[in-house]
Image (cartoon, rainbow, N blue to C red; front, side):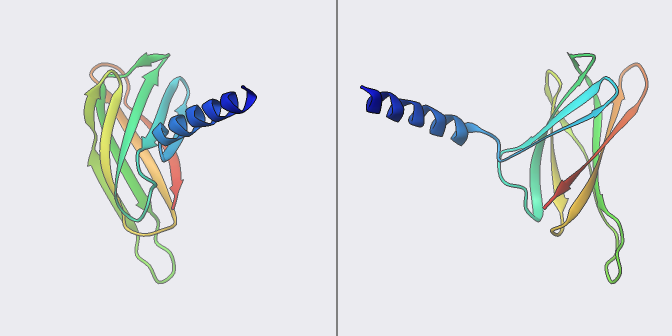
Amino acid sequence: MKTLTTIFLTLILAVSLAQASAFSKDAKYRTTKIHITAEQPVTSGSNTFKFFITKDAKAVDAEVTIKAFMPAMPGMPAMESKVKATSLGNGMYEAKLNLAMSGTWQIHIFITPKSGKKSRIKTSINL
């Protein structure tokens, strides 16, 4: 019976891990919180991210723009990818970013609500 319970719990854990996101990160500025996920591991090239945005624990309805950039370095020009996120409803947004190469990408998320003050949340992603 103990072996059967161990096998059952192992299967539940394996299924839940298989359903988990390949990438997950949280960012925050004051009372605005963003949960960023991607179903696939983040790699160089095109990546699809989902952003769940809340302010004061309520889903945000706004225009969202995502800017990913890598500053210039010796022998390499600056790189940038900027896109307008698509609203999926209830504070969830989706955007495809082109991260041209491995390294640390700075991510700026611009949130423009229909009423109220525009805000920007900064984070980074390492490939």
